[in-house]
Length: 268
Image (cartoon, rainbow, N blue to C red):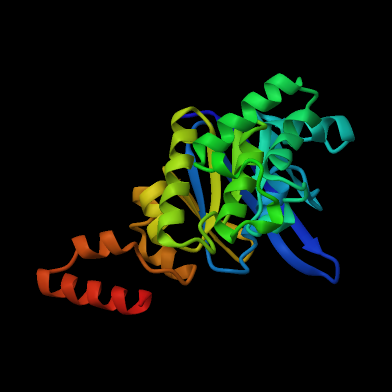
């Protein structure tokens, strides 16, 4: 079994005003795996990601990095975020430089890397995400999908060991989503640990190695994707249905065709 690169123990957090987001949450992130944090909107998934890279500090509990509790002084946080990158759902929350190349280069330069190494990393990240032609484009002139890929390129250029992504396919069309999944798959094959939040059970079924079912600020169950996504009672507890492919496999031909027709009506 893969070793845990990140672990959360008894994590509790409330926003100002007493709004509880996480309640005694426990979670393990296995090194080199793709973990989907699956749950309905408002379940606390984004809040969890903000703890996993040290942006938020828990009221109670711990976040461990390779078995050691994360520290929150400036030096420790810098090292933490060098190892654990975060891409938010809204790319405008992360893009601030005038051009794409400048934005992607900010992280590596902030690490103290040379200009030559920074250029190499920027070129590599843009190439992997298929946006090399946008290097000199002004960030405010990009489409939503292009902005999303630039935000991910900025995180990739830091070469984190773990990449956290909040609803990575939100706002993307089918082609943009497929392209992004291909790029993320290449990162995973190269050894990057991926953690992504989603409410899309079909995406979790297709792309994740492991799944954590999440609701009410806590993890209901976690394990291999094939096992968790076949657990109908656990999915129902989160207000979710099994993935379409699993549903089709359990139906007769007539039932499967009817299910497909219903799925198409939802899309169109």
